[in-house]
Length: 494
Image (tube, rainbow, N blue to C red):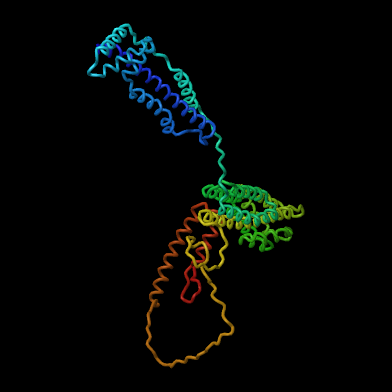
């Protein structure tokens, strides 16, 4: 009888366990779904980056169902609960519960044994599926829906507009930009005076770059790149001027014009590169009719060669003026010589202004290089003033130390003056001969030999290579300056 009662209740007990597991699992899924829904809402509406850490998602959703499953498996489902379930379902009036209680006793009375037997008889018709129907928990569909919504909100793509505040302008770079802008004011004046449109365009480009350096977010690398762009623009303009080529042609023109004594002053100014003076001389042209025939013929031949070289070099503007001077030599009354002379004077004046501009631009390139050094410095640009510091600082080298001028002299001090006299006589002396005449003569001989070798090589190159006239003059002038001297200090004869 004992075995029959327990065997009849064991399937009921198993179904009660399974039902508890399902209900606890449904409750755990509901809790995990609510956690996922909360994290999804936070991700969509509050998270700045639009993301939630994966570990937080897993930690919020996975543990609740696992805890519910473990609770359902471990929570006790005893015989009394199974008996109560059967009695309630089949209306046995606590027969099964009473029989289970009596089965725990080792010494049962006859009445108790009869009650156990009666309960066992009634349990024969008990169906476990009917006693414990496996109904789906009402929480399970709700939990699954909430869990699905949470997963959807966590997986939806989110585009967040990140409002990043721009990096404030670097004080050091702004100071450098202001310094560049201040330097450009001088070039502005020159551009206005010379009415040079190319220079004006260059200045506009450089001003724009200087203003861009003051914008927020510009770092040292960007500032260095903008300064390099300014330098490249200046060098490009200098290359377009091609001052070296023009200087060489103008010197050739000066040599050609030296054939006429009346043009000697202008010719000398052109050869020496004094274009302002040459322009002034050529603005008042000579009368070609006063030149003798031989002088005019020689001048025309030389001017013709110079004009041809200028056309080949691409200097058509000045070549045209030289050609007009040639035509004026053939027919003085037509006034072509004066017209050509004024054209050459105008070109010389323009070359003088461009040389001045080049000098200023060279200085500006050096200033831009200094500005690069200031950009690379990690200390803010500051005015260096003498100041005394009594506390340690990490700004070594960024300021001038202490009182460099010293304390003021007190006018009321009592000064003591002493006159010290010495005893004249012979004292110890030491003589050291550094150079003797023989050594100096040997050095002079070595220098003279090296000079002759180098000069011979340069003359050979000058004769064989197509070197511009201006460069030829520079090379010859160099060797003239380093020519050895004799012992008396005068230059040695060639």
